[in-house]
Length: 54
Image 1 (spheres, rainbow, N blue to C red):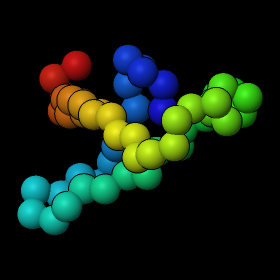
Image 2 (cartoon, rainbow, N blue to C red; image 1 turned 120 degrees about the vertical axis):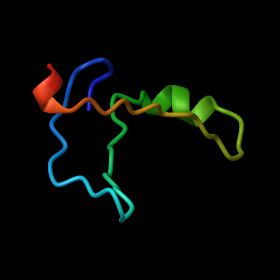
Image 3 (cartoon, helix red, strand yellow; image 1 turned 135 degrees about the vertical axis):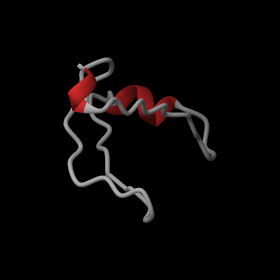
Image 4 (cartoon, helix red, strand yellow; image 1 turned 180 degrees about the vertical axis):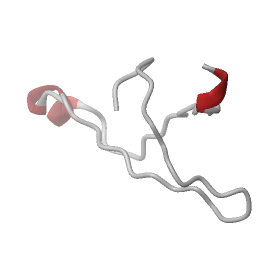
């Protein structure tokens, strides 16, 4: 996934959880090794737009 780039997500359900795995890439190993130990988190916002409204 790339930020601000639309991605088709087919077969969404209105009754069951809709789950999609994402992959994080482009992490510089040297910079990651210098990061303080601990838990990290972030917020990802997903906007779903029906295709027939585009």
